[in-house]
Length: 150
Image (cartoon, rainbow, N blue to C red; front, side, top):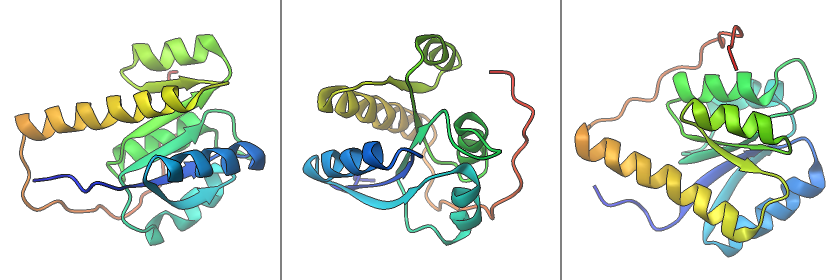
């Protein structure tokens, strides 16, 4: 399967100025930002109605009861979508990387963002080559398991 040239990306970030700047940057990178959410709860409420999405960029620290780690775990396990986790804390980035996730340390540059996106889609292409799937099913959203060890 040939991947589409433009990627559809969702952003979950509670700092509106960061979300706006990231949206502009992604659009300059020929990506379509299909939604911006300020909290894990807002994302979870609308998850069933999301447009076709290739990637979620998730801030680790979000306002509300669900943080980015909990919401990201739901995205990965239930929606089967890759997540780039953004954080301003090196130790959190290191822990995420140890768990095989793709972290992006704030403040980041356009090149950093482009590299993280490249890593995600490179890993996906490797998985598809190892386990090709012809008919992908999108699972119905389920409540996340909030017991995390990160």
